[in-house]
Image (cartoon, rainbow, N blue to C red; front, side, top):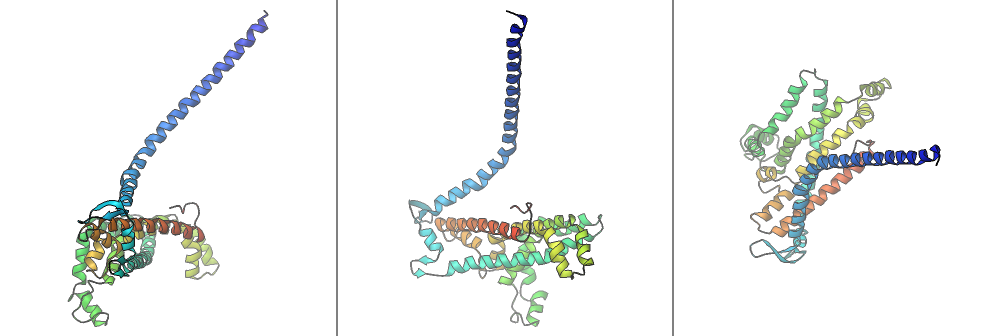
Length: 322
């Protein structure tokens, strides 16, 4: 056998060894990447499973059970809770629960719109302040939310009670009857929701204003655009991601709010969260409460989907992803 014949197998073995080493290196890299992905994703996935998926599955199971003699769920499976939620009871159909759902949607919509109207100028003003004052201004907006929500709500109860300056002013203007208070009322619930969720709108809008390209605003002004048109065509599209993030942070918890309607509504402004809580406590009808909670989840997902579509239609880019 010649020398060239002995070299060919040797080269083949070298190539094979190099190929095997490359495959082994890629395999180790893939294993390392899989481990890194596992350690990165696992905490978030575990959080979602424990605090979202499992409670939702439990509520789903309870909602399709029958109501026991003490309000606890029991077999057999039934859809009576959803019939009761839609208003059908022993005495026929009643619109009470439907009114509660519509009131929840209206209070959520009204409160979110008012929060946006109030938060936009606040966030813009903070952005235009000197840089050293901005953290202080943001703290002034955020610090009240660090106190307990119940305490803040009791504070509004004292401010809106009869014979207080605000109630006397409303009585003088003819908005309420003499010696009546602004609380309890739907107005008090809306005011409490706006006050409670204002920081959740100001912060994402402030972050959006920080990235504002002022050259576009100046270009609109150079083209003699009115302030309203300059805002709509130059400012609004740039702040849209922050606005949508704020709407999600405000609308979702406002829709299921319990404390503020319970204290400031005084039974006149019951929302869906109060209906659910009542069924798990005083009403003693767990399946009906679970059906109401599932309705809230479905409404939340529909709202998120609608916000995504609206954001796309209003010109939001890929960053408008909820």
